[in-house]
Length: 396
Image 1 (cartoon, rainbow, N blue to C red):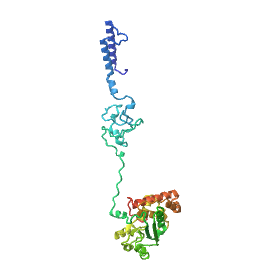
Image 2: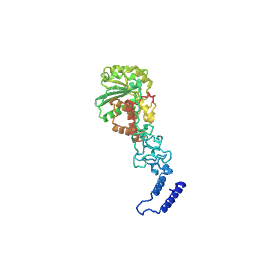
Image 3: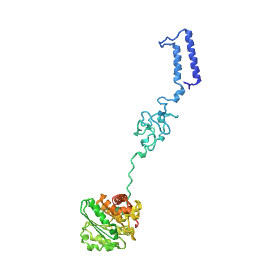
Image 4: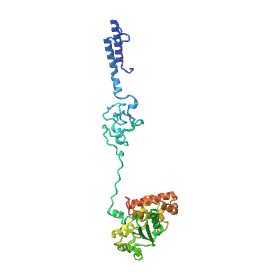
C-alpha cells in the first residue's frame, strides 16, 4: 500500500481514531473471539476496505483477467503466449494501449509472413505448447501467407509448330521387340563410336537390337544415298529406322531418294545431324521433306557445353575437324535409345566401361566421369521426351 496517495492514508487514520473514540465513549469493547463489533464501526471499516480494494491506480495497472507477470505480456519480439490460445491472438480478446497488455493487443501486422495462417511470430517459443496453425483469428485482416501452400507447378513451355514436329517420334516403341537400325554418316560415326555405345546400352537393358553403323569420310546425303542400291534391306523395309548425318546443302534433295525407297514400309528416315552440320541446312531439308524425322545429335552436344558445364573438349577430339569423341558418341547413343524405347536406360555397366576406357582420362577421375555420363542421360531424356526445347544450336 505504500503507493497509495497521502489523502487516503490520512482519511483512514482519522476514521480509525474516530471509531476508537466512539467505542470508548459508549463503554463497549469488542467481545473477544466472537467476531462481533459495533455496527457503525463495522460499516466504516467495510467502507475503508472497499475503497482501498477499488483504488483507481490498482485497477489501471492490472486489468481483470490478465496477469501482471512478464510471462503473460506481449513484446515487439513476439515473446507472447495467451492462455488457451496456443500462441495465437484470441478472437474477441481485450486490447490495451499500454505495454503489458494481453496478447490480443498484438496487431495482425506483427504476424510472421513465414508462418502459416498469420500466427504470431515467436509464439510457442517456451516449448510448452506448439503454435496452432489452424483457422486464422477473426482479428487478423491479412490472408494466409502464400508460402504455406505448395509451390505451383511451372507451366509447360508452349511449343511452336516446328518444335512440336521436332519432338515427334516416328518409330513405334521397340521395348521388348526385336529392333533393327541403320546409322549412316560421315567420319563422326567412326570417331565417336556411337553405334558401339548404343549396342552396349541395348544389351544392358535386355533389348534385342541390331545396330548397323556405316561411316564414310566426307560423306553427304548425296553420297550416302548410294547405299539404297547397295543394301537390299533398305528397300525391303527391314530397318525400323535409318539415322542419317551429313546433311549439307545443296545435296539435301537426295533425302527424297531415301523417303521414296522406304515408302510403304515400316522404316522411318530420321535426320541425325552431327555437331559439324549447319542448322540452316537441316531446317531447309526438313521443310522440303516433312516426311523425315529429326533427332538432334548436335543439339545435345551444344546443350552439354553451353548449359551443363561441359568443356567443349570433353566432347570432341583435338583435331582440325573437331570430330566427336566417345563421350560425344555416348550422348548420341542416349538420344537414339530414348527415341526408340521412350525411357532412360539402366547404364551402370556401360558407364563403367565408358569411364574406364575414355571418361577418366577426359574428366580427370572415374567419379567425375560417371557424374557427367549421368548428366548426359538426363539431358537426352529432357530433349527427346521432356520439356527441354531444341535450341537450333550453331555448329560446335
